[in-house]
Amino acid sequence: MSLQLGDIAPNFQADTTEGPIDFYNWSEGSWVVLFSHPKNFTPVCTTELGYTAKLKPEFDRRGVKVIGLSVDPLEKHELWAKDIEETQGTALNFPLIADPERKVADLYGMIHPNASDTLTVRSVFVIGPDRKIKLTLTYPASTGRNFDEVLRVIDSLQLTSKHQVATPVNWKNGEDVIIVPAVSDEAAKEKFPGGWKTVKPYLRVVPQPRS
Ligand code: BEZ
Picture 1 (tube, helix red, strand yellow):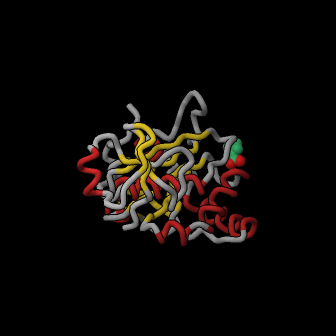
Picture 2 (cartoon, rainbow, N blue to C red):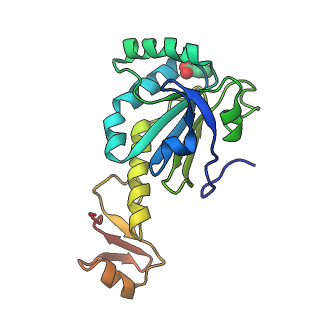
């Protein structure tokens, strides 16, 4: 059975481009983005890793640690990292797991045999500081992911973990949010003293809480 939202992200030990890690020790207390790539020295993966490296300050600002994975050996990662820097203009600045025996890939269900027996799909796991899985994404090898969207989702996850709100379609950080149905109007008066707009009794729109 695949890992689902709310499940505890399993621990593992692995070699990475930044040395061996125990995942729980490495991630202790942080939000984490763990994402897999089908294969080293492939074009789409190269662009994804370069772009994610460019976004590092944005992940840092949100207290998020990023870690990639591919089922190639460490020596190949080190060679590929040079290509990523040369072609994408940014050096890798987060660890890349070497998983040639596919231990982590199998643990996290990143191999989908009906897509490929040997390569991982493009998986993304966003994991909270409580080690629970907050988001999963699965893309095929042929489609690069949108890491701006990953950041946008993290903004929503972090906000909605602190406040009893949900974020509407295409929401971006700073825009109005929705009071969750579990909050009565009575309780909402205390939580949102600045008031809200009732579009329907179940659709109450409020400015994004700031802290
Ligand atoms: C790529 O990253 O470009 C890629 C990897 C595996 C299959 C197809 C494309």
